[in-house]
Each structure stands twice: as structure tokens, then as C-alpha cells.
Image (cartoon, rainbow, N blue to C red; front, side):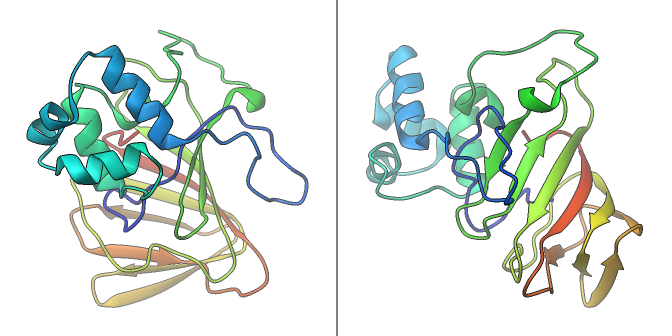
Length: 209
């Protein structure tokens, strides 16, 4: 999945699924949350910049909503706080050994560029080894190029068609088909259909969110 995609999901929040498949309306502002976390930690933009390797000017633009960071940048910001991406953006809801997650309890990551909606299918838990996601990819959208990262990933297409590129080969994966790959191989994805969404049950390891 997008461990290093071009544009960051804006934020995540409680799921309120709409029947028309559109993104939920209650998506919070990432900049506001980042500023709140930084101030709560009593650190300056310059200190976050030094820890994350990003400039203070760029971080200021993120906090004021003038730019949206990539997932890679957001992870670097989170690492500056010693948190995961979800830990940085979400309210504290670590459920410990929680086994069941209800549909209305899911949290979201929404890609600002592709519009893909990723629903986290398990609560945040310490020591979690994999990350299952319910991914909805809008018509004609995708990862906008290839990327690679540590780990492995598995996917099962629930609806529509997924075009998965792995290095120089493109695989067309339809409803009911599954895929598996080492994430260290360059890969990308796209919904080739111009009218309907593609829905994929996507599992990545180690957890990115």
C-alpha cells in the first residue's frame, strides 16, 4: 500500500459511511491537530524540524493548512514525537487487547491527491504486526507512480478492478482475485475504470498507521 505515496491522507476520524460512497464530512484539519500535538509536547517548530529533517517553514505551512504533507513527511513528523502516523493524528483510543472493532468505530485516512479512502480495520494496539485496511479507490485514480518500502502486502479485490504494477509488469486484478508481494519491489496501483470504484481488502506488514 502507499508507504511512500505522493500526497498524504488528510486525516482520519470516526467513520460515517455515506450511501453514495463519498468521503465523510467530519474530516478534521491535519494542521490544527499537528499544532495541538506540538504545543502539548512544549516543543518549537525548529525542534520538530531538526528531528524530522523538514524545514521549519514547511512545517509552518502544514500547521496553517497552506500545504498537505506526503505520507513520508507525515511519518517523519510523527517520528519526531515518537508516535505512529495514527498516533499523531488520532485521539487516544488504544483499546489494548480489543478483539472486535465495530463498523462505526473505524478510522480513516483520505488521500488528498487520489481521493482513496483507507479505513483502518483494527484498533490501535501495541505490538501489532500487521495492518488490515478497507481501501476504496475512486474511478481513474491511484498511487500516481511506484514506490517501495520494507515489508509485505496482501490484497483481495472486493469490487471493481485493480491495476497493480510491480516493477515493469502490470497485473489486472478483478473482483474475487487476490495478490501478494514483497513491498521492497517497486510497485503502484490504479483503478482503470472511469465510472466505478475499486474496493480492496489490503493487508500490510509491518503496520504503517
